Figure: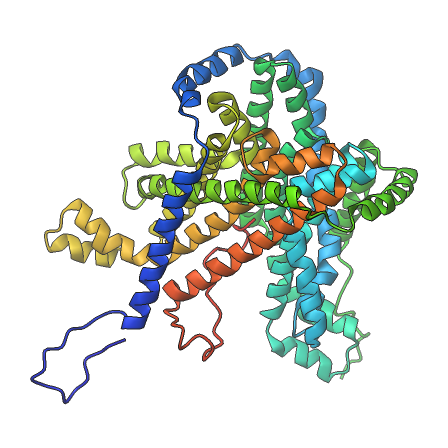
Length: 272
Length: 287
């Protein structure tokens, strides 16, 4: 930063927030952003004819949704909803079980071997880079369509999230209790259970709850590719163009997502 | 001195143990409900072997590569346009839903809108857009714009609710108009975090833009889903590798962007300090 230097009186000085180099780099970024936007807009395939009747289509969409088919909820949505919640919960639990050791391996203060840390981090990153729908497609190819594929997809997608945040929480743990336990000759497992665990417990539970909240949302769409849950009810209703039934599914998803968020907020306030 | 029996410093906590038992019972019940059986798992492992052997080596042959490039370009374009529109719409909505700046009759409807945008997965929103505007990239853009509004507006509003009102008051006291108060009193305080949300959303849109194609909303997802349905697994692997590479590049770019704008890093000072970029996204907000 070009702060005015004393002893150079008489010369006109102007205060600037950023140095010339910083300004050039910033300008380059703005330029790239605008250029990317302009290029995208010009290149993207755009069929204006489709847009002309969009208002009509949306109107048609809502007209066909009303009145909603309330009987559909008891007939197939309720069961699918329970399945979705089970997929989300079991998937989260699976992710926690697998992510705990990976998070520990990724934390440098717990496992002071750089190679192991990087390996664990690589596993976590690759878990996060693959979308849960893609995980679902992969597991469907292996285990066939159904809730098993969905649960595994949710679990494997969540490992990266839970493991990364848990590892970071471990790395932030204070040295004091750990050193004290090591000094009195505690075993490795005791050091972890009584030195690290009490420190990271709140972080751990809030990570798990947050992931569960996200997973409820994600497991609702897994059915679109055939991995069980409420998405399957939606898919079959859509294939039959029963928009009044689709509306029931959408309302159910909305209600459950809001309830899950309220529940998570409540637990976080009360318990953690 | 009175001798006392050695006390166990870590007494058993029965309510917690009961909780673990209940959890175990739930897992067994739920696994039964979902029809998980050991034999299915075993046959699955067999399938996995066949599946993996058909995946390798990935098929990057000429015509396939052209399809990947075409799909990925479209995904990238969807992500860029959707992020831009999302940011532009999120600015006013975020301001409107911040409770310390807006009166209740503005903030409540705005917050409701944000909650509505947030609660549906982009793929579900994409289905609705495909119905409205037909197959293609426009539907994907619409779906991701909705998701971006939900994410950026919510965090932007929360960031604004945490600002110091002293600066706002100072600017207002000097006789600034409402918009001057915003630009000089409010926005400078939240610009850094806002930029963080936007780059994060660009990453997230890039991930999702590769997926909305599954329901016909443009991008490489359609190609991926078609390859899955044709059991063209070596092509599937090629697409997956390309998607992951693109997402990695995107993440590296947004890290550089954060370093330039938030840490004021320059090329000359790039390697001199090891300070990492601050985590702008709160824990748990990222997906």
